[in-house]
Image (cartoon, rainbow, N blue to C red; front, side, top):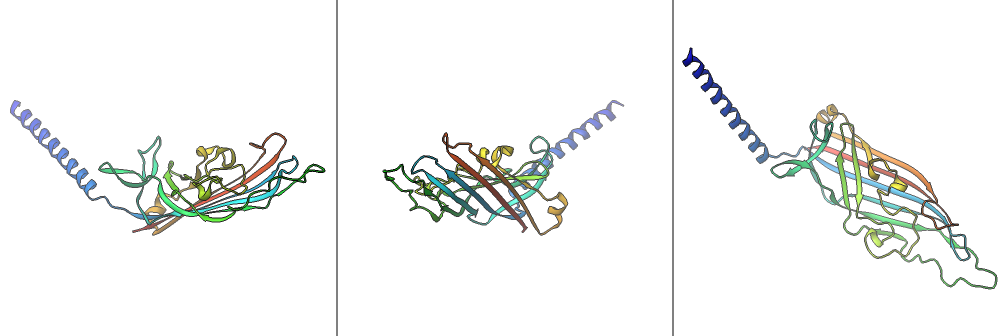
Length: 256
């Protein structure tokens, strides 16, 4: 009986060691053979239709728009999968190599344009006076985004992604240069919570396709959008202003 127990114990020890060895080899092989599953492309659009009325003599009055368009600078590959253990309750992962394993894809360099339209004029001066300055508009029009901007897309649970556009300031030349000589609205960044909404810390939510759709379709395209109208949030006392912000981001995954 004693010998039988010893034999069983030895077998269990050997089996356990073999399992550990296999797991270690499998993990190492997985790390060595990291495989991307999809290409990912992002197309983003931000539009702020603004109005302002500086009610004092010679103050600006009128409307305009800020329009930003962007996408990834180069083709981006990811390993797209749902991880039930990611985050608090599981999450989609746009995976990239990280520390010998798989991590969330960091924000990627982007390219795009920013277009400023300024239709403002000036209130008349006081009787007998003249307006000393006129509204500068030399930087109005379309220019390439500088920086470059950072385009972010990441999983946020089982049913959605979130998108962000960083390093783009709408009242800077090209979004990152000197102060722009053209009127803009009160909203200054993509994720400004006062004008884009407080949900997701200003990032844009994108409903995600189902696990089955990702597993069986060659192309998966998902889009998210938001629309918010704000007024007189940061206007000077006595002035009037509004910002109507519309955002849309589309993410397309193509199986490799």
